[in-house]
Length: 278
Image (cartoon, rainbow, N blue to C red; front, side, top):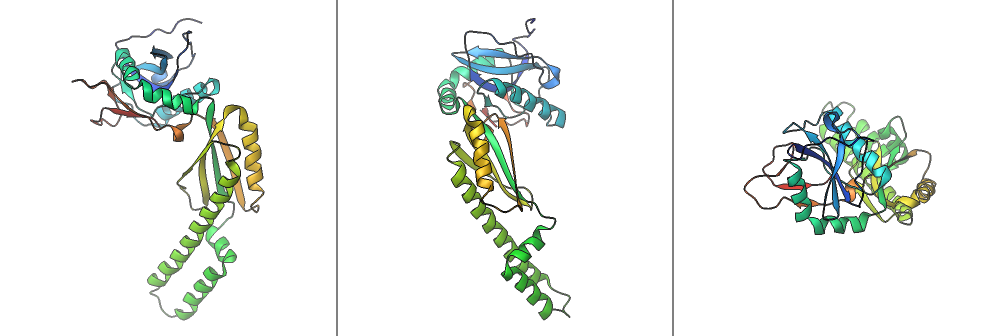
């Protein structure tokens, strides 16, 4: 393979951090702006970057997709600490200074996450109408609905009553989500080392879990998901994805060395000199 042509003076897009070894990798990857992906090493640490002529990266689909594709390819080979989309360093020297200044915190993350990946688990209610499903499931909801309509048959102003009914529905759905998540986590903690419960986004979503799993236990994790699913009826749809870089388990807050010039920037043009991971 031919060597990657790079310029130490160009700005760098930062994708991930990982441990450095004695070899210089040739990733054979293209990142943002179709630029070649390569490594910058410092004190046993490695930053995976590509060159850019841009001073700001727009969060467009093609750019985010390119960033995620690089992270996915890196994760298939080894443990990496993913960086948030849009981090740009002024030059190679800025990257090396960043690694040197944050060496202890980065290495502590590697010790905790080495050999581990993130698996996602989403559970949803697989029904055509989630409200009608809860009405049929919970008598208190159906009785309250019927009571409202009977008492107010000739009253067109049902706003307060509808709000009360909606609150009951929301409380029942929240309680079901909480109970279901606890049941699943109780099973999965035998198959993974940590679980983070992320917010759900859709009305039919029951839970959205991020699970930290040892890479050599992925088959066991899949069995754990199947074991957990057996605790629920067919109404609950289980869908797991991965392996991914451990985005939800990286809490790095990297600070550039104190200087008059800013050496690392975000795409949002923030004045803060810190760099956060995903």
